[in-house]
Length: 209
Image (cartoon, rainbow, N blue to C red; front, side, top):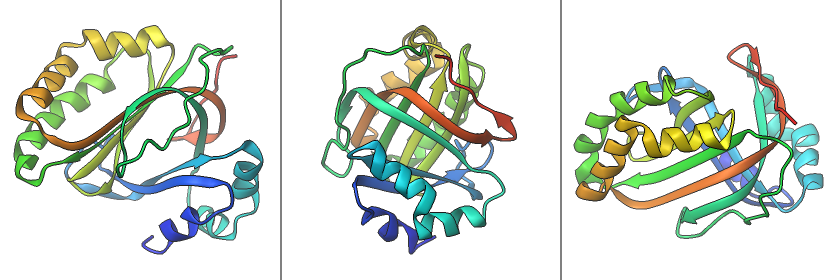
């Protein structure tokens, strides 16, 4: 796994990439899960992306060791913050024929704030798992405990916003984030899902167009 990030980063047409591990359960756990990984890549165009998915030797080798692979293609329509001091996404118009939404949140946690941060994670994990309109979600990260990200897919923008702006537990976590200044860097992005390939935990995830 240590050699793959460099291979993926130099792929033709790829402008940004991260190979991330996950925590146990839904990923929001201090105990790592060495069986589940997330590969996020930003592309100049669909042609380069398709070439990578179908023909890239390192990626095909990676897939050959997997029991299950799920790929979700999305177009960013809103984002703010930075990841490694840059904004990796090219923001596109929101026009779409699908109701579903994908959300990515990512943060680097200040090392002296780690205990305070992880104390609140279990409650937030339970809240998103029970959220109405959530299709799937997972907690992932570049470095265990310190650099964390959340990927989630929602039935609609309304469901996504209801959780983000009305869920008491989530609002409490946001308040704590501001009060305690947990993060040294953070990024939030929303995407229009355009294509899905494969299964997620044995289930076929279909997009509604």
